Image 1 (cartoon, protein in one colour):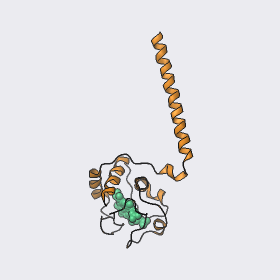
Image 2 (cartoon, rainbow, N blue to C red):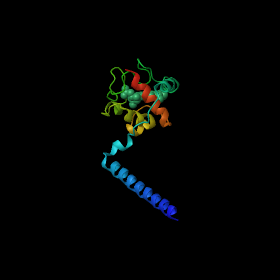
Image 3 (cartoon, rainbow, N blue to C red):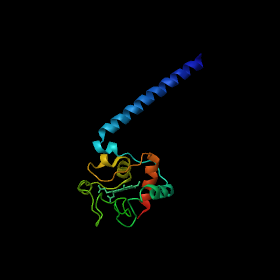
Image 4 (cartoon, rainbow, N blue to C red):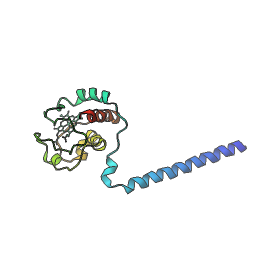
Length: 142
Ligand code: HEC
């Protein structure tokens, strides 16, 4: 009896701890500026897997060191969005005033149109883990 009571009690404690934790998270989200909510941190990525995903998905339009249908990718991490000289970006991308970070890249690869309305890259990666691997790979292109 006593043990059962303790278990019930601790289950209740856990439940209220979860309630407190989830309301704290909710308040934290509300306190952030609106766009930051959309730019989720990718989980840890594997650059080696990212490299083969890049070959598979991106090289139809992109190369590391030359502009093709899309802009060259060397140095992309940390670069201003739409800023590579010699590539003709959509006016929308060039005017976006964003910077490429793991968060903006994650959003771009998940839904580029939601990051920059009017952009011209019609391609997305649905898997969060694949996006993370691709982002880890892009970060190695210095
Ligand atoms: C069907 C062609 C196509 C494919 C496939 C494609 N892209 Fe793009 N990408 C583009 C185009 C076009 C742009 C320029 C968009 C604009 O100017 O609005 C672009 C732009 C980008 C940019 C912005 C770079 C900058 O200099 O600001 C990044 C980052 C990017 N692509 C990453 C990727 C990755 C990673 C993949 C593979 C997972 C990929 N793209 C697949 C066509 C493509």
